[in-house]
Image (cartoon, rainbow, N blue to C red; front, side, top):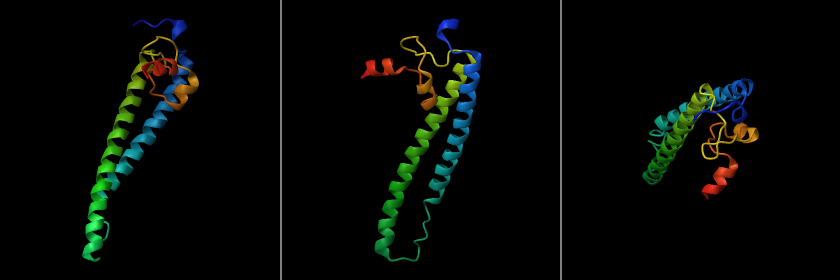
Amino acid sequence: MAVDKNTRYSDADLAEFKVLILEKIEKAQHDLELIKSAYMNDHNNGTEDTSPTFKAFDEGSAVMSKESNSQLAIRQEKFIRDLKNALIRIENKTYGVCRTLGKLINKDRLKLVPHATLSIEAKNMQK
């Protein structure tokens, strides 16, 4: 879909959003590394020499912790992918255009949710 000058953000705005998104990607990748590192260390919580009852409880806790860390990692990877897709939209100069209504998404919304592809209006119509 061709986007004319009236329904797209200026190159200056796009450059501003690009900086914001690159910062978010960097932080998200750092957070993902922390999650993965916690996941890798979950197998040993220093309970080898404690009572069998506590050890059984701790193993159950470790399984739940691994599952939640795995879910966190999956969500974080999707967030990073969504942010990278937003960078592509910036390059295409389609960033910030609602994919349903074709109108500009509010700047404040994009600052809070830089990977948004729907305006609040379009999002509310989905409900």
